[in-house]
Structures are given as structure tokens and as C-alpha cells.
Amino acid sequence: MKVKLSSFDKEKEYDSKHEWDCFCQGGGSGVVFSKKGNYRTAFFEAFPKEPKCFIRGEGKTLEEAEQQAWDRYQKIKTCNHEMERRGRTDGYGYCKHCSYSAMVFEPLTKCCKCGKPTAYAKDYRGKWYCEKHERIKPKNPNPDSWERMQDERRLPRKQKKLLKKYATHLFRKEGFKGKVSSRQSVGMIFYCEDRQIAPLFMGRFKRKAKDYIRVNGNSIIK
Image (cartoon, rainbow, N blue to C red; front, side):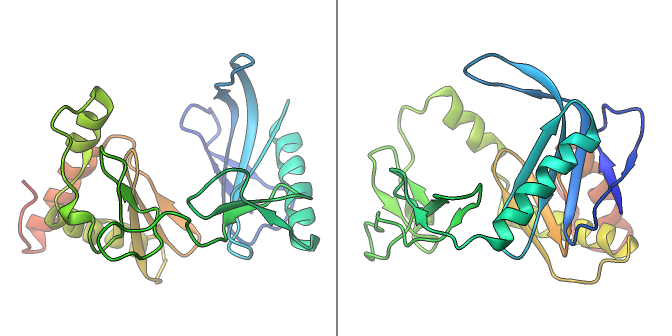
């Protein structure tokens, strides 16, 4: 299986030693920021769908990193998971016996408008809002630098829709025919089957999308 490597690697692809049935990525020298000290390591990351989770392996070489990730994956698949919250209230849980973790519980926090259990969005006063009512969440009158940066990065719905059209075009060119979905955290990430597109430079991605939309007769992204 061909695995795409980090843009910092000289080699663009790596031949995996195991048959993964999901999207994988890796690198020969990734930087890890830790409380015990930062360090560089080869890494291998996998995003299985069954069970849906994230697996990361590290080592001196890509082969070692992949083997560590593979061993963890095999243990996850055979484990009788016993999940615990470990102090989290958002529904995320951790297995007591292996490295599996995922959203498995109902959130302990509730929407202040409808009472639905949610951990979707929280305002500056500490009140929670579900996805339906997030649009009426009040803005912080005195935002810190992080909140201002997040507001600047948040894209209008119209732009998201057009960027998604362009991402769909890219997926179709690679032969992926499934449904395209997106998620916005620090930046936009688009998903289709076991492939993902996470534009490193959103400005450049917007310009390419703008050209594509113009040629295809759609509205131009501002």
C-alpha cells in the first residue's frame, strides 16, 4: 500500500509493510511537542473506520513507527473495550486495556436553550449550545487573541459550500466517488472515503477554487 509522506520528506511515498484498510500518512522526521521536552521522530498515522479511531506509531524509522501502529491496531480490534471518561464531560472515552479512544458516551453538558446533551459549542460565560442553537451563541465582548484568530478563520457558509465543490472535484479526479464531508478546526479538512484534503495554505486553495468555480459558471468566492 502506498502511503503519502510529509511534505518535508524527500520521498513522496512509502510502501507500507502491512495491508491497512484505511487512510494512512507518515513522515521520517516529525516534531513532537511534549511537557517532558520536544523531540523528532519518524511517525506513522492511521485512521481506521472500524472501529473509528486515530492510531499513531513512532520509531527511529518509518518501519518501526508503522509496526508500533500496527500492533496497537491489532490490540484495539481484539480488545473487549471497557471505556471510562477520565474526567472528560464531552462524551470522549478511553479504554482501560488498550489505546482505543473515541466519542462513546453521551455528553454530560446540556444545551442552555433546549436541554439536549451536547458539547458542540460553549460561550464566554460557560454556557453550552447544541449545533442547532450555536448560531445564537453570544460573542465575547472582550475576546482574547485566540478567540479573535478563530473568528478570522471561520468561513461563511457560502464560501464553505463553494470550497466543498472544489474539493469534490479534486476527489473525483483521483477516482473517489463517495460522499464528501468537511470539518473546521484550525483549518478546513475535507473527507471522502479513506482520503482527506487538509489545505496547508488556505489562501492558495481559495484562489484555485475561485478559478475552478469561475470556469464552471458558479459564483466566485470573494
